Image 1 (spheres, rainbow, N blue to C red):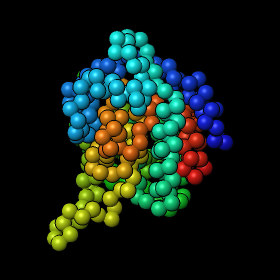
Image 2: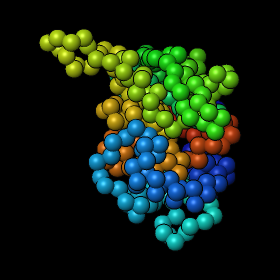
Image 3: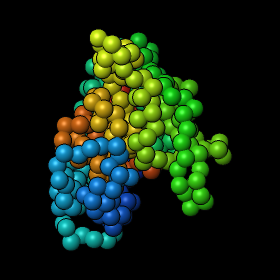
Image 4: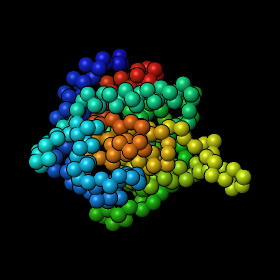
Length: 276
């Protein structure tokens, strides 16, 4: 597939509702903004934010970095994502991925949206590996319990063949997650050097770059790793993390669209990174 032009990509993003008028309810966005401002851990994605974020601060950040409707009295209905912001952030992501390829860096990739975004990550992982980057796959099989409406259920880290981390349940299906714990477990396994004169020095396996979303991205950014990722307009934490300099680039998009619709965006990203 040929990479689209910026104008072609913008039209396609709007047509498929990846950006523009999106299907994410405004009331859901505002609820998540409120919960992030209240420091609810589930909505912080593993980030320890420095600023005392108010609901108004979060809304203003999301207007600036995502393109949601700026009217604080818009309480119901659908919301918006500015496709120009989507493409500009996608270009920043591509530039950083291109640098990783040039330097042959070590990279981790992970998604909390395995049903929709996995092909994007797989294409990037394949391209980076072909350029000599190390795609790290730590903590495979690590598991923990989460509370669901059906009681406690196990989740464990699994990897797509290309090296993209995601969570799988005992039902054998991959699952959506906001949690930061899996990335924290991955980084704990990569760890640091053994105690001694060099105690605290990062190990040779420490990633140079994380490409991720949700808590996978938040935990990586909080650990000081260069992090680029995707976030929906109801996921304000990564945008706040970018505003505080903890996340390198966040691409605003609807993360629940049919996977094939992300194809042009993926081609544009790879072309920008020099990996097409």
